[in-house]
Image 1 (spheres, one colour):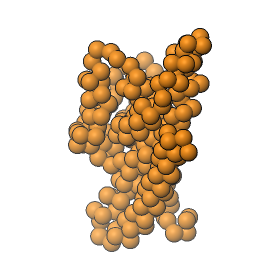
Image 2 (image 1 turned 30 degrees about the vertical axis):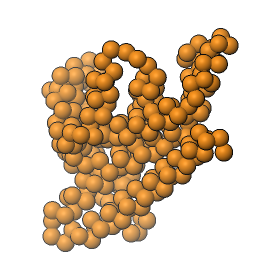
Image 3 (image 1 turned 90 degrees about the horizontal axis):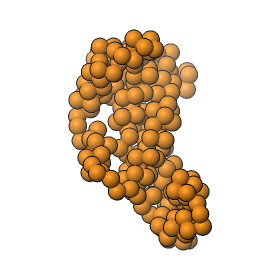
Length: 232
C-alpha cells in the first residue's frame, strides 16, 4: 500500500480513517440516546427533534458545512466562546473535519439503531421493570444487548459515510494537506490539476474498497438482526 500511494495520498488516507473513527466513536453514545428517545419516548416536540436529527440527510452538504462554520468557527456563535475559554477551535483542524463527518453521518446511525430498538419486544422490557429494574437498568441490560447488532450496523454505516464526506468538510475546514485533507478532498484536488487522473484513480479505488467493505459488513449485521428478531 505504501509503495502504491504517495506520501501525501497515504497521509490523506490515514487522516480519513482517523476522522471517520473519532466521528463514529464520539457520536455513537449520542446516536444511541437519540434513537432510544425516538423509538421509546413520548415528549413534546418529538417530531421537531426527529426532523432536526435527519436534517443533514436533506440539506445540501455545503449548507451543513456553512452552518457548522457560523456556529463552531473561530468567530462562530459557539466557536468564539469555546476558543476564548479553552483555546480550542474546530476551524481548519482535523477535529473540525471529524465534527462535520459526525454531523453528516449521524442520521444514518440513528436510523439503523432506532429500527433495531423498535424491533425489541417491549414485553421483555416490561417484565424487567416489574422485577424492580429501573428504566436505565432495563435499557442497559435488556434493550441495548438485544439491539446491539443494529448499533453495530449503525456505527459501520456512519463510519463509511464519514470516510466519504466531502461537501460539509471542505466548506467548514477547507482542504489543508496533512491537517484537513481527507480522501474525498484529495481526489477533488487531484482532479483540478493536469495529470491528476492517476492519483485520483488510486484514491477512488481505496474509497470504493472501504465503502464496499462497510456495506457488506452492514448487510451481514442486518441479517443477524433479522435472525434474532425472528428467533432463529
